[in-house]
Length: 172
Image (cartoon, rainbow, N blue to C red; front, side, top):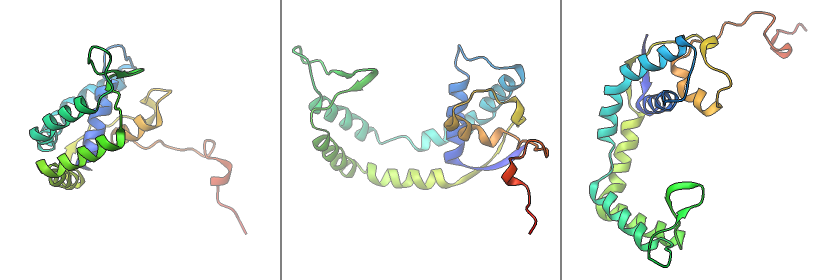
């Protein structure tokens, strides 16, 4: 089904589908088919958005250097990771680090690039989304993940028995 989606929502949908499509995740065949089909359909649009929204190389390199400068290090000078968050480095003074990063954003033009990226992501694209019935969405599902995949889910059909009591019309 052709749908007009904000680019931001396309990125969220693609990322959610990528997460759901990871090895080890298994769903009934109809939902698995919908995940695979939509990943294929959204891939080129997602790649174009990602390429357009990539940060400035000078900013990326400068931020890495700032992180090394502000990192908590062990006796050998190796940056310490945040416990339970592999790849995330502990920072000695977060306020000083954030101030330095903000200055770097201005110096490299990343602040203007971020505004351009926000404008880009607010734009829309018409994409062909393979729809799946509400009943085929696996349970339980994380609410944030459900919000991301909502553009590919057909609205559930409610019958009178499934409506909450306060949803029925009242007579006066």
